[in-house]
Structures are given as C-alpha cells and as structure tokens.
Length: 178
Image 1 (cartoon, rainbow, N blue to C red):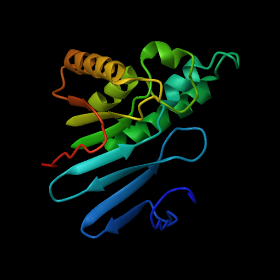
Image 2: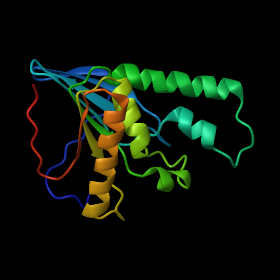
Image 3: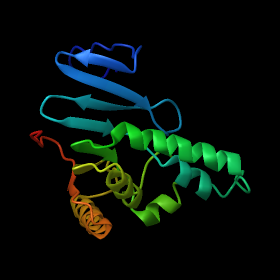
C-alpha cells in the first residue's frame, strides 16, 4: 500500500451490512484461499454485486484430485457455500464476477481461487443477474483472448436461455444502473 499513490484510508469491515450515503451495502465471505469478501450495493436505481476473487466451492472440491476421494460431507458443505453466494447475488442488475480462466486453463489451476468463464456464466444465470461483467482478467491474456472468452460467455448465456447480457470489464467503462 505504501507504493500506491494518493491518500488511502482503509476501514476495517466490522459489519456485513452498512450504509454508504443512501446506498445500502452488503458484504459476504466468498470462496477463495484466504479471506475474501464480495460486495452488493443496493440503490434506488438498481443493484451491483462485485465478487473480485471467487471460485465455485463445489467445483473446486470435486476436482481436487491430489487429495484422494472427497468425502460426501465436504461436498455437501461446498454446495451450501455456493448456495450462500447464489442467494447473496440473486436478482442483481449488474454482476462483476471473477472469470480469470477459460475451461482448459482452469483444469490446471483448480483451487487457486479464481473461476473459469463457464462457471461464471452458470452462476450469473442461476442468480438471474441482468448484466454480467467478466472480471479479474489473467495478466497473460491479450485483448483478443478476452474477446474470445467474452464471445464464449455470450454463447453460454444464450444456451441457458436467460436474457443475460455479457461484457468484459475494462478500465474506464461507465455503466448506468436502471
């Protein structure tokens, strides 16, 4: 933080629900190695959820092959954790969600705490989000790769049959709510 320009003031998160002016904010712990929090902001014009570091707990547990068979109670716990995340973002207008990898990349990065596009689109569809912004782009991806991942995400969204709009998050993008 010492290397970041500007005057940074950090507040410790003490409550999972709080106000920022007229905006009602909610926080939820989400699956990622270490402590990670997702946020939901509810305004009179609509809602925005931001989950910067997120990996499906169930997918991660079920694909973790180096640890032997996964116990049924671990899978049940993973499902409950994913359902908690789903309830947290349900019906959100704008969802900014981790989609760092394509499915092939993800297979060798299970448990790193980041999602593949396929899981991100599925979660957004199940949550009945209106607009999804793919976020947490991998540093090795160029614009063409992100465009291909976005096109794939749109195909998946259309296949699900939900009217989900999909875009890649990018610096400087302004999106009106409502």
